[in-house]
Length: 254
Image: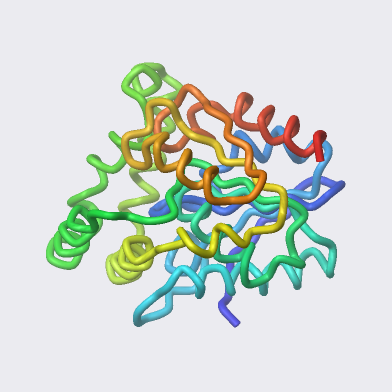
C-alpha cells in the first residue's frame, strides 16, 4: 500500500480532490475552503509528490488510480465519493471510474485529456528533467498553468510563486516517471464505459489541455456534461469560487 499524505476537512458527503502533475494537495486550498462548509473533503498528494511516498521505478495511471482507491476505501469507510480530478488528477479519475466504479458517486474531470496524439513534448520534458532537474522546466510550466492577467495581480503572483516552489521541490525521478504515465494515457475506448455521472470542465484559456480535449471526453463518456471556466490550466487555483459553483450545481442536479 502506497503511503499517501491525506488532509481531511469538514463534515458531510465525501469529496476527493486529486491534484495536477507537479502540484500537491495545496493546489486545492481555495476550493477546499469553499467545499468543506458542507462536505467532508479529502485531498491528498499523489505518490512522488508533496509529502507522499517516493517510489522508484515506472509508473502508470492505473497505479495512481489504485492508490486513490485504497485511500478512498480507508478514509470514506465504504461510502461512495464525489471524485474531482484536475489534469493528472482527472486522468486518475478516468482510470478509477472503470476499475473501481463502486467507490464513486460522481466524477469531475477538469482541464484534462483522454489521450495525447503527439507525445514529443512530453519526451522532451522528461529528457530535460532527467538531465537538469525539475527546476529547469518549472517557470515555463507555471506560465502555462495560470493566465497572464491573473499572474499580474498580487493574488496571482503569490499563487504562481507558491506553485513554482512546489514544483521545484518535486523529486526529479518521480516527476519524470509521472510524465511518462501521463504521456501514455489512452482512455478513448474505456471512457465509453464510464457509468457514473460525469462533469467535464474546460478552461477557455487552457493551452496545456485545450477545450477540444474536454469536448472529446464529453463525446465519449455516456451522458457527460461539459462546462467552461474563464481560466488557464489550473482553473481551480485561478477561479476557486466559480470552480466550486460548477461542482455544487452538478451535484445538486444528480
